[in-house]
Image (cartoon, rainbow, N blue to C red; front, top):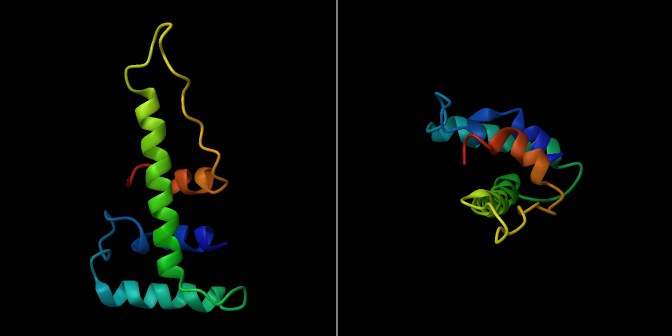
Length: 97
């Protein structure tokens, strides 16, 4: 659910957004996300999303590296992420990271 809520607020993750660098706007948006998630778990949404974003970046790099220059008999298999949140993150972070 955290990913869906953050995805709906591009100011939190899309550097191309006009208000991305506005600290006040981002603080308000994160406070809103925390309020929405308070019923589910007592967590800091910003820190949790940071961890998810970092993990997505690592998994994405593995996919990219497995695709580079691999052809012929000596080619290794293309890396397929087994992380359950990869597809959810890939749907909106692919062009950002």
